[in-house]
Length: 353
Image (cartoon, rainbow, N blue to C red; front, side, top):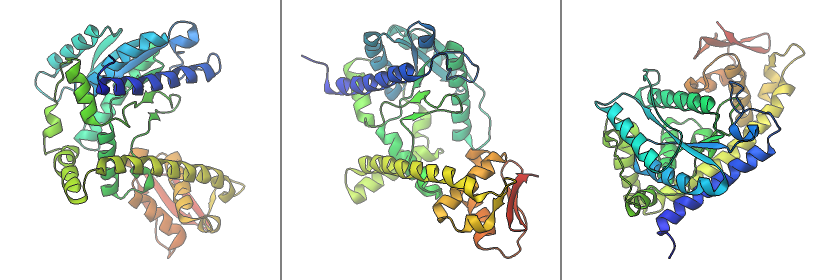
C-alpha cells in the first residue's frame, strides 16, 4: 500500500521542484554563482547540492519539510532547514528551538534558527516579510544553498490575488506569487512547490504522519489584513459564489503572470526606442506606445532612478503618466525614494531630487 493521498501529493510536488533545481544546476555555466557574495552552490563545486526549507513550524511548512526530507536523499540532494524567529511574540525563541528539534528529527542537516529584528517600514506584515527574506538570503548565501523551498499553498495564492485586487495595482499584483523567484543574482533561489496544493492537503499530510504543528496566533488575529481575508473575506466569497473560488483565483494568478511577463518583455524592448541620443525619454514617442506598455516603461525608469519598487504604487505611475498624456504645465511629481519626475522641453526627466 502506498502513502496516504495527501502525503503522496506533497511528495510529488516537492519531487518535481527538486528535479527542476537539478536541471538548473546542470544548465548553469560552470563557476557561475547564484549568490551575490560570489559563493558557488555546493553542486557546482562537486559536492551534493543543498536545498533548504524555510519552516515556521506550521502545517504548510512542516509538510514541506517532511516531503523534502523524504525526496531529497533519493535524488542525491542534501536537505536542510531554516526557521526565522521574528521576536514578535513572547517565547518566540523557545518556539524556534522546538522547530529546530522537529526538523532535526526529520534528519534535515544543516538546521538553523535565525533571529531577526523586525522594523516598521510598510506596516507590520511587510516589515516581518522583509526581515524574514533578508535572513533567508543570508543563510542561503552563507551555506551555499542551491534553493530555498517556501510553503505557500494555493490558498495563500488566492489571498495574495485578492489583496492585489484590493490595492488596484494592476495585472502584476493579480499574478500573485511566482513558483520561482529571487532577487538580483539569485533569480531562481526561492521555490514554492505547494502553489497547486491546498492548505487542507498539507494539514492532512501532517496529521497522517503524526507531525506536530504550531498554529501561529497571528494567523487568526483580525488586526492583520490577511487574517481577516482568510477567515472572513474568502468564506464570504465562497458563500456568495460557491465552491471553487480559491482554485479560480489561483488560475487567475497564473494567467495574469503570463500576461504581465509578456507586457514586461515588450516594455523592455520598447524602452530603447523612446530615448534620444542622450538617453532621455521623449514624451512624443512615449505617448505613441500602448498605455500598458508606456506605464511599464515609466515604472522601469522610476525604479532605475532610485525609487524602491516595493513602495511604488499604480497611483504614482499614473501621476507620471499624466505628464505624457495630460500635459498642462504641471510641476514635478514627487515619488518614493526622493525621486522626482518632470517634463522639460518635450523630454521626461526622472532623477533623485
